[in-house]
Length: 142
Image (cartoon, rainbow, N blue to C red; front, side, top):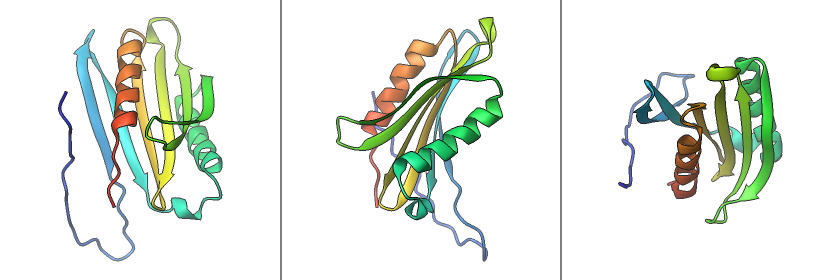
């Protein structure tokens, strides 16, 4: 297992533009498909009243895009690092086309973070373990 430190980029953005970087991490191919873990950073989270409010709004947007989804888990918990996260797990599709999603939201240093993993049915257990490992090992710099 290797620690990954993502690219550090600097650019001058035009007036009115803001950073919307999304980090993507691809899992190994299984049954012809790859699971994906994404992480996004939202610098406007300091305007949010609470972690729960921040997470519920974003979770609703994700569910809207997947269509007919079933919510499997929704809770606030503390990671071993002490970081408080709002976790959201859902399932969509049916039969062999069933897919799973895991979301975790947290607010740190005035920014909101979303960590998301999507997986098909065959890779569900491996993808969920990878999601937890990434979430537990995530280090946020200033």
